[in-house]
Length: 431
Image (tube, rainbow, N blue to C red; front, side, top):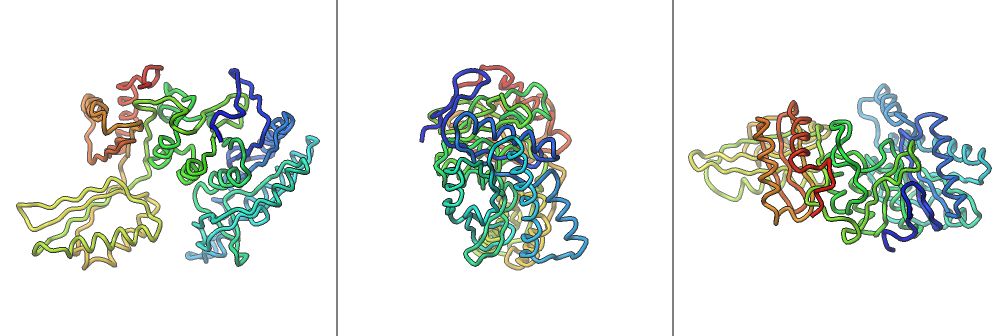
């Protein structure tokens, strides 16, 4: 499947005949008026001769409200019952979306995750899709119906309802597109594409016509809230072309996400700013050099992986002038309590470290390609920050990104300075 198959010629008109999956997020379905707008987009695609399956999230802040209700009942609600509760949000959406499509004169059929054949593992709250049996959805499309599928949820082989965690509807849409052999998966949201920086932080940020899977994966993993990282990874593995588009500007083609050989190569494509991180520094005394300290660190990161807690910006220092070791890393702030509990449980193995936590930080990530072969990129980032008098706490580099950790109050200014340094508001950053 080629990323540009069945694509468009022209600035604002899509001419496509094939099979499409469209995903509509919570902001796109926040009220009845917006649900009707999403239904119109699906119907228009079907009227052009496409077979259309839509994947929908819960309306607006429904999931947050359901979580609040559960917390009023119990401080530690059962993970299974939380999944039973949270899956109701998408079931409201699929019914209303189907009704809206039917009111426009098209046939539609709604499917829960289980009815759509989405089989997951049994890890409540963070289940991964194991496979999709798409026969029921295929039959619906063959009948000429628009299939409306609940995102964020699935069912185990034991008929237990599960949810997929943050960004689960994006993942559902891509998995469904792969299972249906769709020509493309369009992600409709409240922004009309991927930008050179968050336009809410920087008004001069520019929309990108296309980016590679790899670049989008790095952006998603470092704070860009356009797509869930797992969905991009799945799209890359299954070679499913994605488009990020706006529900409120449906004629805009948005940003295509596809194979790197089919999209422009940027020295720097975008800058992500993540204000949701926490930095932990662990300093412990080492009585004598041995493998024991490393064994404690190994145990810590093994357990973090088992808990599905992602870390970044890892730094390990052994001081020659004193018998001590210092380790620093970052995690999502929402995982902080669990990380602290884990460190306490491994206290002896880690050398009973003194722990310092900083939540007032920003992680700025500059994303591009072949950055390890372009030392001038790292130099330019530091030149920009130095010119603005912005201190840097930690640095991490790789082939696709350079990340710096700095005090949160400098986050917006750091994005502006780096964006200007690479002239990202202009068309002059293609390698």
